[in-house]
Length: 389
Ligand code: PMP
Image (tube, rainbow, N blue to C red; front, side, top):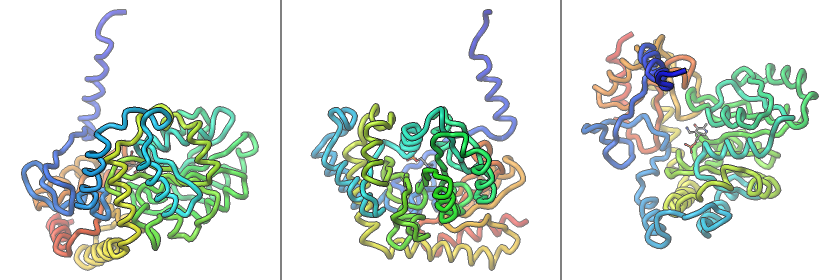
């Protein structure tokens, strides 16, 4: 056989273009915040996961700068070789304190956390039950583990129970996987029911708190605190890159679980430790989460205000059911979603179109921040109103 073995790449890209699924990057030219400079123009930022507005906060910047000065740029090796610093341990203890768990361990990203933890916990003789709308990192982690995978219908406890009744007994271990806040819809998983089923069928339960940490619950501990499920035998995963404004991921749980993961999670053992600057920034953010509840309160007030204004001025705009700062509305196709995204940008609003294959139906995703002002939200509603029907 001869010819170009890569010719299929161009054909594949053409197919992506034809479906309006082609992805491009947009350059932010300022510090993250409620407003940012996007390709030369100041816009109101409804596109970030920086829910508490901490990624550009001077205290995080100063903490990162001090760590850079003291410890340099890279951590130079994996945690088990030359990469470990006291800062990592301080951060892990702060996470365990927030989460009220015995221990925690930090990874280099949330994505790597999910890959590593799932692979360490299950293998060929095991079963994974995964919500159909789970994040890509959970889905990929599940595939890589070699376990049998059954996707249950989104947040559908009945379906999960049927699948467990039919299949659980055929496997050694069973792991249920769920996002706590679904990142492209904004709804919450039925955590109390998931815990009950995990208990009934002898399953481990891994909850991805990426979009809930710092956001949900009285102290910002996440969905677990929101539902009052703390202390249960749960594996909690999350990221340091959203409300905590830094980079990295974590697992919080029992001391035995964390000890086991430090010995068995490949994406923790075989990768370079989190950089000192990112670690210090996340630690500073956790301190703010614990000490400044008004930030979180402001975030929820902003969410309530946006929902109220949409209801008042845009009665025909159907937001997807959401119990988080993520508010979405669907469009009939990817092309329309792109057009709406562009329209909003022309009004100085940055709220991107999210298209397949990330989501089954194209949509605009609006992400509210604690640092948005009322006039930012009013401007968004004005821009949406100008869209007409
Ligand atoms: N889980 C969920 C639910 C996420 O939304 C994300 C990030 N989009 C991740 C995990 C991955 O986290 P990170 O960005 O830290 O890799």
